[in-house]
Length: 293
Length: 247
Image 1 (cartoon, rainbow over the protein chains, first blue to last red):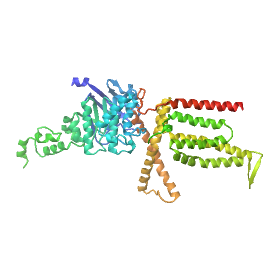
Image 2 (image 1 turned 135 degrees about the horizontal axis):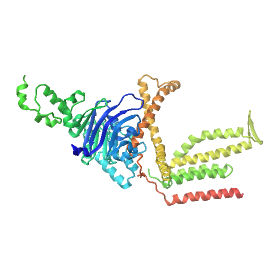
Image 3 (image 1 turned 135 degrees about the vertical axis):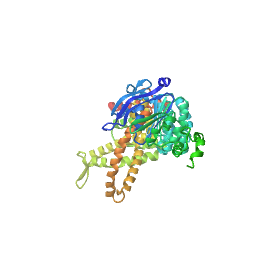
């Protein structure tokens, strides 16, 4: 545990935040550590403060949105207040929720749109072309390269937005519901990309509602409920925690099934969170006795 | 679209040409030269393959203005040499002269800038200004405005439909449509303001304010003609000024 603490890349200590002219604290006394190279998912119901938390991590709070921020936010051993907003762009990539506004509005093709961040970072032209080509291929949007960014569908825009951020190669990726407009195949695909980013050593913070995929990919979970962090820890432990059930957040489907079975008297060796774990998690010896009770 | 020689010129070369023509019609007295400018511009437009667009825009933008200006000057410019009278309106030689001079200049200057925008894509022009030292923020403002206008039109249609479903009458007589305009306008303006904030965040997440010098994939090249032409303009202008002083 001491070791992982050393590798923390984002640290929050007793962070609370209130939007301007609002009396309610949106984030209440949140403390957590995100380790370098880990995939952390933030989950919670609508309005629980997930996006606000992302904005704090990205530094838009307090650099862009005013309001009251209490506590310490530390990114890479430096307090977020000490960064300039422009410096954070290279360090933390932020793909946000609404894909319809995530276009620069000055570029005429998807290719140029994806290249925009690199131009701003002052990357040399030939390298830009190579990197953009590579990312277009990775995100599988090569067929869109000459299309106008304003003329794309929601799902296409979401992929372009993701591509535009990961092309900048930031160490930390904050991704807020990247699959809300995508079909199941597109969703799988985005998670594939996220997994690939993790393999490259990126630290990933993801807000998502699709629990099955979170169970499959995420290392750690942070559970938010009305602005408070109610649970945090390794994915498996959090889903198995009885307090998770009280938060009224969806379980992975297989976990839900298993817990229902348990309620009806089936003993579980452990709480399964992935589909393939279900058969082996059930203690079959107990089934014979209890099932006809 | 294949670009021909004239279109391929550097935006600043074309811009200087517009300035050059504007200056020369002010230097050369009388209206004959200024009226000759328009057919010359038309020839350039034909050579560049934008004649139709150019002529159409000039007609739409300038014709009405020119007619009004001409008659205003004709009737109301003070002068002694009466040429004709119709009711309370009388026109003088001075008025006729001044009207022709003014309209010829407006026509020349207006059409040369219209030709400039027919020949130049705005993003090329903005890029050339950026190369010449315009801050990226300013360039962004100009370019994004161009893209935002069609986007806002789309937004306005969406709002119009939304208001229609709520029972606002949007079709019918002029008055009905004018009345429907107000409930469309407020949400349009408010949503535009709120999307500004999101746009700012989008730009920020693309490292817009990164403390480095930006690069650009969009490059403008200067040909030999681009280096020579501005000097030619300058020499001709100087010649004109000298000619005016000496004669």
